[in-house]
Amino acid sequence: MTDYDLLLTASLGAVLFMLMAGNRAFAGWVGVAFYALMGGFLAEMSPLVYAHAAPVVSSMGFSMGGQAVAWQLDAVGWYFAVIAVGAALAVTWFSAGVWGRDYQAKGGNLRLLNVSLAMNVSTMMLFLGSADMLSLFISWELVSWSSFLLMASGRHTVKYALRYVIYAMAGAMAVMGAMALVWNAAGNLSFAGLQSAVTHMGTAPLWTLVLLLFFGFGIKMAVLPFHLWQSNAYAFLPGPASAFLGAISSRMGLFAVLVVLIRLLGIVKLESLSIVGSFSARDLLAWVSLLTLIIPTFIALRQYDARLLLAWHGIGQGGYMLIGVLVGTEMGAAGGLMHVFNHATYQAILTLPAMESEAKAGSPQ
Image (cartoon, rainbow, N blue to C red; front, side, top):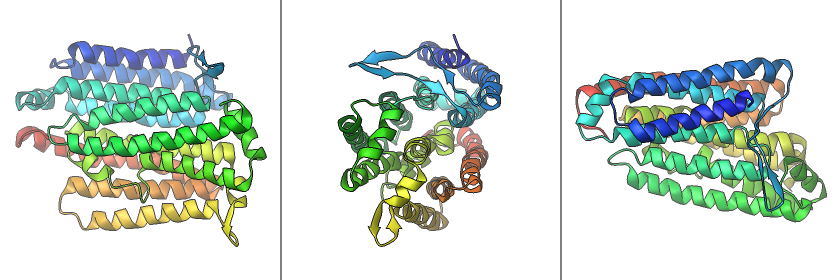
């Protein structure tokens, strides 16, 4: 087994343990141990990923309909995985013990909270190692439904979670439509097939492919105008769920944009797709990013509830990350990716203290 297999096994072990004993007072501390173990496996992989610039391949691959379905963790996936596991470790450590007992005593479903958090981490570890369009789609759907489960863990947030599902299903259909275009052009769903398909597509099919992919991934990122589901779905959850989702969940959409649209299609190809004059697909995505960083940030400034302020602010920060990547330079990409870590860190720091007051007074959401 590779280190990536061990990482996936540990993440699945956390899910199974939480299913069996997630309502126990000590469950949070066991969860901390699982996430620390996963962090250890990621640390083991770091020299392999960076020193040798080679992905760590999982032995879990299989074939579906004649198409290979595989997973391998490269440097970009490893970076996002470190943030996801670190966020899970932080929120689980903070919520273990007194907070968990008080939450359960006030009627909160501690098992559901622990299970859904562990499922989110496990499915993200799969998604971040996607090695082809089919594994990416399968993992994408698993992440979406795990996110729904975590959003539904609050007593008053099911309606917001259901709104998210409507958006997520529309996004899934868009990604599936893009896969159909790739299959039609290349005859397979490998990443190499996607790159080959792009070179043979005409302008109209290529525009359709870009728009379908950006629509599907943009929903998870909550870019304008697909952002209306996120603020309430994140803001009124129990503290650990709100902190984790706000820190890393919507960045899965950024990862998908980075891998598929930026790395595989390429900035040059996006620039070559013109709408009017020199206004290209890259310009369109950049303007969407700019509007996303401006409008939700302005809405955040008008909030009187700190949870809503942080939720709207988080939407705007996704615009900063995406515009950095779309710049297309090493400095721009580094800045956009660094802000993923930066935002996850201060989002957790600002959100977690609210959990303490939640434990002292007031019923769980």
